[in-house]
Length: 137
Image (tube, rainbow, N blue to C red; front, top):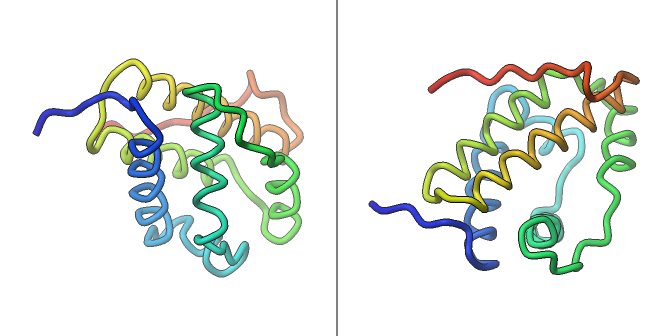
């Protein structure tokens, strides 16, 4: 199967749906979304798709505050760099499963920056001091 770059919103919807399915089923971080945050996917997925369309296509549809949300979540359960490393691993895997190209690489770079930034913020560290080690497939 030939992989195409992320060229439209539908591509981002595909990646986000694949990512959340893997994440919710994940034995390491799935419970954070299902049991702790109790994410309402019908509401949450379009918000996340808007976030990524803003990043890739500069659409200006996203209006959330991910840092605040993660600080609130961190008050319920301590979020560790390991949680963010796993999140990043699953995200990259979802991107690479059916897409390849410049926009895909941009998504993965931004995802790493987001993971490091939020992990550092909730752990009261500096982003440049964060190390998220991804396993090689």
